Amino acid sequence: GRLHNVLAMYEMYADGTKADGGSANVLDRWIVSRLNQLIGEVTVGYESYELDKATRPLADFIDDVSVWYLRRSRERLKNDDVADKALALGTLRFILRELAKAMAPAMPFYAEYLYRAVRDESEAESVHLTKWPSAGMIDSDLVTSMIVVRNYVTSTLEARTKANIKVRQPLEKLYVSSRLLVKQNDFVDLIKDEVNVKQIIFDENLDETVRLDTTLTPELIAEGAVRELMRAIQDMRKQADLTPADLVTLTVETDAA
Image 1 (tube, one colour):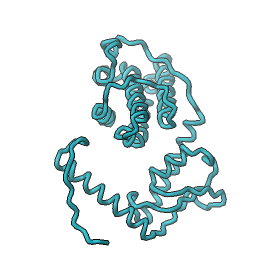
Image 2 (cartoon, helix red, strand yellow):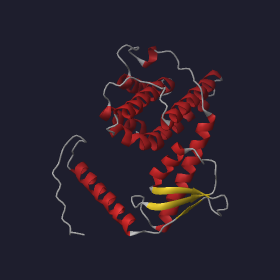
Image 3 (cartoon, one colour):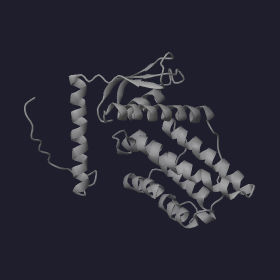
Image 4 (cartoon, one colour):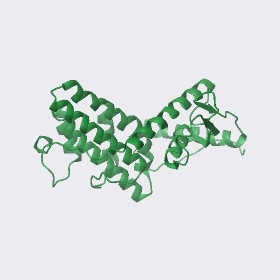
């Protein structure tokens, strides 16, 4: 079901962009490395006749695609930046096609459905007529760094919950206890965007993993109000069964302030 939702999101924005696993974007490079890990693990499992080791990694990879890669790439798919949108679409199409091949022995029917949804007309008609995928290079440092990033995000979201501050409310500062990601701007930007903070400060003397500055200035409160309004509008659009391309007239009742 989770994978089917990923496919539905791809189909919503698909525009014929070719499958491509060569993007330089940090999220794209990470998910391609995870795909190569998956193919390697599944291959070893089948070659050693250990079916649990051949199939269990599939669920973990699908979770990574759905919960992290697609979540962080959703805005890229909607983006006016045509080049970046093409990178995201090409990468998503590539990983779905290769995933279909890797899951074909265990889930032959859905693998066929998935493959036919993303295949190019020049490619084999059926996933069961394709060659078994080969694992490419794995950027181990990138995979490790992304684990660190996601752990920071999880800890920060827990801290927000304890402070009873919604993620839609921007905050000024987040202090983190490790300097592992210093100067790795791509990863820092991912954390800032996911947990909605303006800046990240690295502090090795911190007692906990992360610490939020929960001070709310009038400017931050106003930004949070804008996000709440946008969320409410999006919910109304869903209830009205509108597509992203449908234009609406919006009337907002408010005071001058």
